[in-house]
Length: 260
Image (cartoon, rainbow, N blue to C red; front, side, top):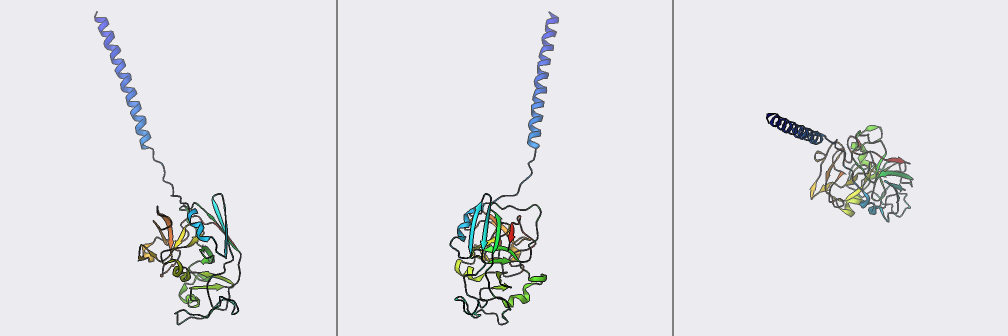
């Protein structure tokens, strides 16, 4: 009889041991799974909603191919300028307010500039510098240039050759370095003004009724917030009245290709 009791006690002990070990093993597995950390990935956006802003613009054609959009622009502004040939219907003598204004020796001519840009831009792991020359396209087809003049000089002197809409040509290539006042007059100071080569949008110098300065923005001259076109929020650049005006220390996203 004693042997039977000892046998049952031994069996019960073995059974509890199996349950305990199984429980601990299961608990350890869950704990390890819970401790697994997925590396965060950059937020991807979709800029398809703003493509319609480029519809019916004489200077611009665009086409979507998979995950990219290709813009081709003649780069001809749809506004007046003293840089048009004097016989051109949009020719107008300088009417701006810069008392130091002087016309540079260049003139507006037709271009053939192509931007291939991602429709789903996201932050680049390794940032690239913005090049000299075109870095983006405005909503009227005029290209955005880097914020510095050729040779790396600041805009202090170059700004004196900007026309009444704050653009001017290099050779025959018309462009904006700073706020394109023709566009902000037409669409508003907080409006969508165009895209940089990395696919992120450019907005005017105001947001939610307040003027934006460079101190409100990151090193690349942008930030993430809701806009009228992207109510759920998107990273975007702002044009400001203080340097670097449009873009800072490189593209926030991965630059597309630009040919001219």
